[in-house]
Length: 272
Image (cartoon, rainbow, N blue to C red; front, top):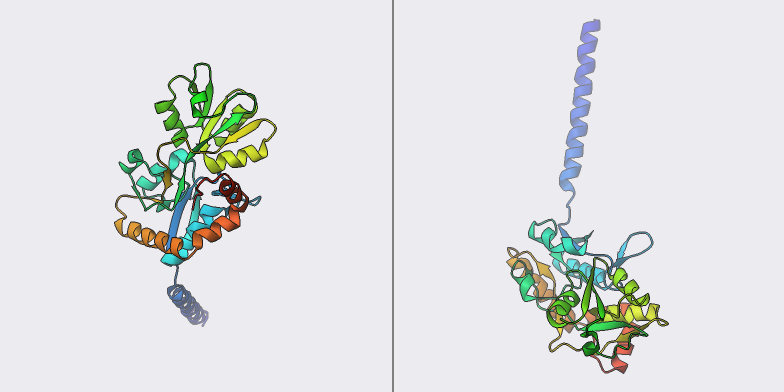
């Protein structure tokens, strides 16, 4: 009798567990997971790429990425990556694309693809207030020191065009700014908006020289793996749509209102 009871008990438990497993499997099968778009950016460049006090990604590029995700019907995941690691991450498919205020250059195009431009910029100078720097020519003088962020277009420009000055290379933007604030460097080369922002934070010690000194503007694009030709087409379509329907104007109004007013007053073309 005991043996029969044990057999019946085991059978009932087995049936119960099988039913639960089937139910769970059925639930799992019915859940539709949204495809993920992994976007690489360095969250160290406000107001384009940054994070709030809780570490949540914010900024122009974050909103841009989310709007792109909505257009593509994909869930956007932001992968915070050091600037030097962005292109390697893209080439090894750890991320799907880069939206990180990245300038389109011929050198970068050798290993990755870019979308059509979504913004334009130009290099500008954050000069120490007592340096006597009025324009780019004043920096190309023996004894002058220029701070640049490693791998940036400011770094490339200084190496190529400012042969007489000493170029100080740093990994972080804030280190470059600190060199100028403390008068250890005469100037810092970076894009106009960064120079504007940092001058606003250090008005007592710096001067912002925002007028373009390059022959051509720099253009920002979404960076993609060379194999993702179809995704590149979709991103291009979205950028065209966003320019036409006012999406970029809304981003500028939300994040860059004061800066745009300053650029307009100086008659300098704005990013979007």
